[in-house]
Each structure stands twice: as C-alpha cells, then as structure tokens.
Image (cartoon, rainbow, N blue to C red; front, side):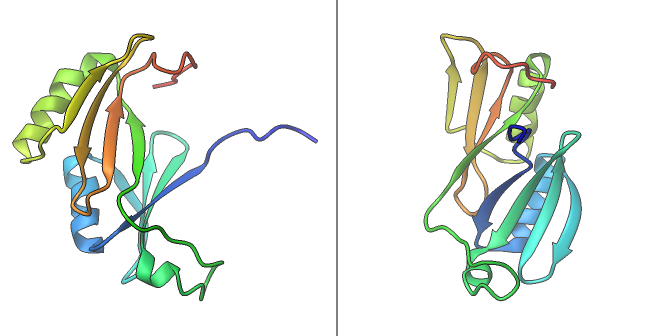
Length: 136
C-alpha cells in the first residue's frame, strides 16, 4: 500500500452561497469549477486543490453524500508568494476586507488573517512556516 499523496479538498460552511461565491471569486480571485444552486460552490485553488463551500443546512441532510457540516466559523489557509504579500494587503483593503491579524512566524512565512462573509477565518500565508516545499 502506498502513502496518502495529497490533501485534495478543503471544505468550509457558509450562510449565503451567492455572497460566498462573489467573495471567493471577486476578492480572492479563485476560479469557480462547480455549483449546485442552494447547496454548494466549488473553486480551483492552485493547480490541483479544490475549496468546497457548502450550505451546512443542506449537507447535514445526507441526501447525496454522508451527512457533514460544522457549526461556527472554521479556518483554512491559502498559499501566496512572499513577493505578493503587499499586493494582497492592498487588494483586500480595496475590497473593504479588514485584516484581522498579521503574523510573521519565527520559522518563516507571514500570514494575513481576515474573515469571509460567513465569518470563516481565512489565512493568506507565504512559504516558510511549516518547512515544507511550497510549490507556490
């Protein structure tokens, strides 16, 4: 048996799919790759990852897949190039998104934390924190 090779999908739960889609598409520049009205919208992240945004009230029903969901805000990080950090600060500001916290990590990398329209904690992080090859 071979080892697990990748984390393919990351999911978050949102209150309003239209607001979430606009935020992740227009503010963060992610490409939508799938949508089911009233249930989910999916985005390509980089070359091979997918961000799944669900309405928990629908996914908790377990109609199409095993039931899943979450209560309260969640957290995930999206990788950016270190050279783009200032451009991302300006882009978020231009879209009226407040940076909640900026952290320079002792092991390397810088993180910008902010909230999506549903209150999820989104982090933009530059390479270095985990000591892993970034590929971004």
